[in-house]
Image 1 (cartoon, rainbow, N blue to C red):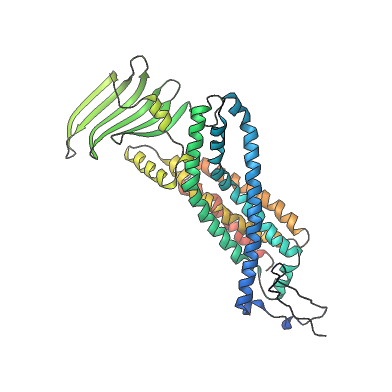
Image 2: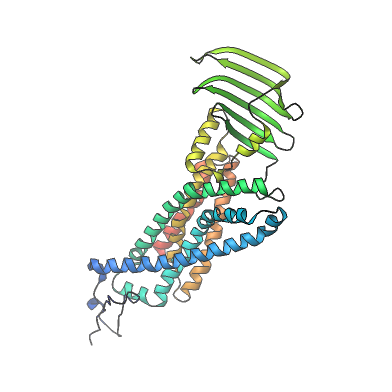
Length: 402
C-alpha cells in the first residue's frame, strides 16, 4: 500500500503539513522539503509569523502587567508628594522603553517555547522531521530573530531607555521628596561633573548630608587648554559663607605650552570660592542607567584622565551589551527544552525556561557584584553569565532530538 503524499495548501498557511502516514509506510516516498527552496521559504515565513505573533502578545501582556504593578506600588508616593496627573503620565510614558527592554528576554523565551511547543502539539514538528528537516534547520529563523532582537534591544537601551530613565529620575528627584526611588544618595563615589565646559571636577567620595568631599580634582580650561588644576584632600561647604573650606590642597597654573607657571600649596584649611556648589554635585551625578553606551565611554575616559577608578563604570558599560544578547541566549535554551520531553513538552519547556532565566539573572547579578568589587575584570564580570549559558544552550541543542 502506497502512502498518501504530503501536500502543501498555499491558501491555508496555518496547516503547512497535511500528511497521512500509514503503518509500514515507505518513508523514502515522502517528498523532502529541503530540496524545495520555495517550500523552505514558506516554512521559514510560517515559523517567523507564528513566533512574532506570540512575541507581540507576550510583550504586550508583560508591559501591561509591569505598568499596573509599578503604578500600584508607587501610587502612594505620587499621592503623598501631590504630583500632578500630567507629571505622572509623563513619568510612565518615559518608563515604557525601560519596561519593554526588561520584558524582552522573558517574552523571547516564552515565545520560543510556545512556538515550538505548538508545532509539536499539532504534530507539525513530527511532519517536519519526517520530511528530513532537523531541529537545527527549524532553529535558524528563530535564532535569527533572537539575534536581530538583541541588536534592537541594544539600540533601544542607548537611544530611548537611557533618555527615559533620565527624565524619570529627574521627576523623582524634583517631585518625590518623600520616599523617592532614586534618592539623593547620602554617599556618592567617583563623581564627575562639568560646569560651562570650562571647569571639570572629579570627586572620589562625597557625603550629601554633611557636604564633605574627599579626593578632589578641579581642572580649569580655556579654549580647550588646561590653565589651572587644583588637587585637594578634602572640601566642606560652608553654607553661611557660600564658599568651600578646602583642606590640604595644591593649585598649579600652566602656561599655554603646558609648562607649570606657578604652584600654590597649603596643608591647612583655606576658604576658596570654587566654581561649583553642592547642588551641582547632586544634580549632575548621573547614574549609569541614565547614560548611553557612548555617554559612559566619554565619562570613563574623563574619569581616567583625572586618575579616578572606573571599574564600576566599565562593568556597567559592558553590561549594556551583554544584557542585550540575553534575548539570543534564552532562544538557544528555549528551543531544545520543548523537544526534550515527548509528553508535556510545552508545560515542561515553559517551567524549565522560567527556572533557567531566573538562574541566568542570578549569574548576571553575581558577576556584576564581583566586577564592582574588583574580584573579576569588567569584561569577565559582564559576560560570565552569557558565556556559560551560551555553552549550556549549545549543549542542549546538540543532545536534543534532531
